[in-house]
Image (cartoon, rainbow, N blue to C red; front, side):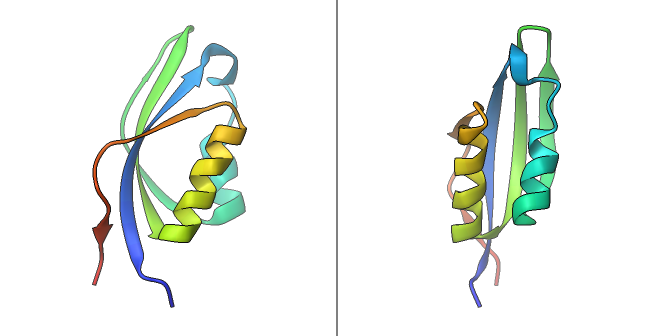
Length: 83
């Protein structure tokens, strides 16, 4: 079984994407647990800080999914491995 890790990222949504359920869709597809750490959404842009929890491979797939939906992904810090 793969080790569970936590990864923090900032997601930046262009104005056309701020009303789409991209995070919900990611959860439905990959079952990556998430915790919203911070969020700021205006008409022009949305920035959300998320903490994701899953195997490293699954998180990578989820991040690629965000990018495929037009969301910019930036890491916040290094991974934390849960024992």
